[in-house]
Image (cartoon, rainbow, N blue to C red; front, side, top):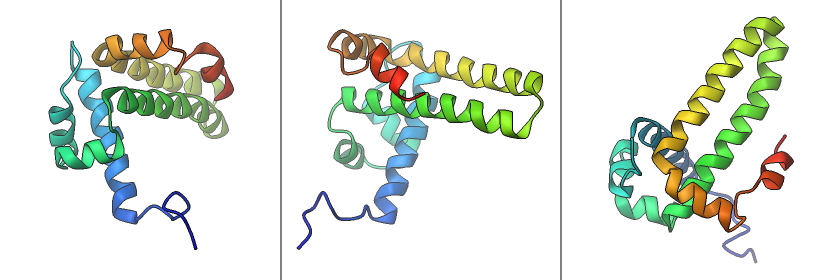
Length: 129
């Protein structure tokens, strides 16, 4: 018998989670202050209950967005270098880095709390590379 943690994620649940991460990234990047969870759910086209099922707290959502972006930056560098000349790849990667920085504006307070509590830290980020 499999436990709930061992079951594969349903396709619609995985799609909702990805939509929430993408929407949160967009909303956080365009927001000068921390965006509401309702605004993120609305942008993703899901209900607030769906957002909280995937991310029970603002901190869990911000952590997931942060980790997703770190993975995109690190894998993006490898992918770009595999497909482009180094100078072009560097420019494209700098665009990714700019997006990464812009997103921090809308989650700065929560991100600082996560860094202070060592949920997200330099050592953990370094492990992603």
